[in-house]
Length: 213
Image (tube, rainbow, N blue to C red; front, side, top):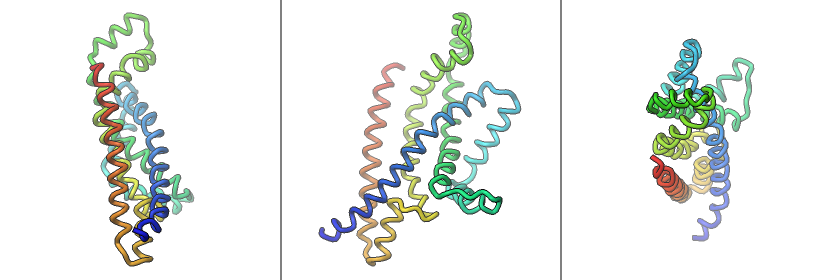
């Protein structure tokens, strides 16, 4: 127990970085995903093709490889980014592509009659999307969105691959230094606890908004 109390502050510091990355990414994902989804539904043909190419590339390649390309590959083209910026860009573009497809499907599931009704009331397209379509879409895609958000937290462990001191890397360093795998067990429990908290929060969120369906 004394050993656990000794290494716990190190692991919690790593957890703090993991949660910081997660928070930044979650905040940035949704504006991007909504804009991409709307663009794919109602944009010009050129815009649709560009956005389709974006989602095809970022959904079709591993997140870890994307992270490597941004952090290690871009410097060869004269673009050098910090680890944090590289991680945020990789995660936002990757998860944003998945979320954009989820939201696009949600938008297309809304009855077309609602667009016509809004137009009859004199609403512009922007007003229709903001007041009628997007709120309904968010409620419909909430379960899939919550699942994606949970996966995103667990994927933050990938940042250890570029040397960031997240929870996983902190545990690995302790194991390497002390030659004890206790840190891995503690990290396992911490990930499980945080994931469980997120699951409970997302479940309450789904129940809260499902009553309107």
